Amino acid sequence: MQSLLALGVRNVPVLARGTEYVFGQQIADVARFVGIEAAAPVPLEPSVLIARWITILHSAQRICRQLPADALARPATDARPGTLGDLAWHVFRIGDAFVECAEGRVRDWVTVSMEPPPGGVTDPTALCDYGDTVIARLEQWWQSLDVDSRMGRGPVATFQGDVSLHMFLERQTWHSAQHTRQLADVVERRGVQPAWPNRDSELAGLPLPKAVWN
Image 1 (tube, rainbow, N blue to C red):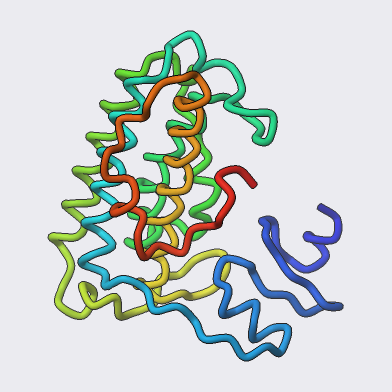
Image 2 (image 1 turned 180 degrees about the vertical axis):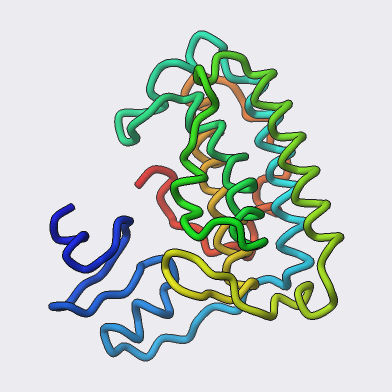
């Protein structure tokens, strides 16, 4: 933390060299920082991303209904701090944080996305209800955009600096998708088939890590 604060940042992943640093959210930024020529993958179109994100959140709702209520207060896995309920809430909270940042009300979307509900998560139904709220908010945000914004143009001001709306949308789409993979893994380890029949097609084209937990 002292090293991070000395650089003037508070969040990871960060790659630093002396007093220079780059955030590790985009592989193209990391490649430039270390002097490697790397062809950046072409992201899905914004209209595809928003539709895919909403579809994934619906899948996350189905998986949440498979989570036992008595497991929500326990860790999802030893590889991740916090409770299973916190992780499930975070899947949807990412959407709230995205809209707050995209509309210019906050810059630190990470802190907003990690905020748990008051009193914690104790009921799968509450998770699904919150998912409905976030999905409706994302749909309303998308409908409010002008033509240029729907093409992903224009910057979004974040604590990491300005990023393109297109890249920010892709980042948060696969962010929710990765955590949905983790929820599915929790269900699978309990011997239950996750209610995610179209998993492969919903994840196709997203720059997800190979590991489910990292």
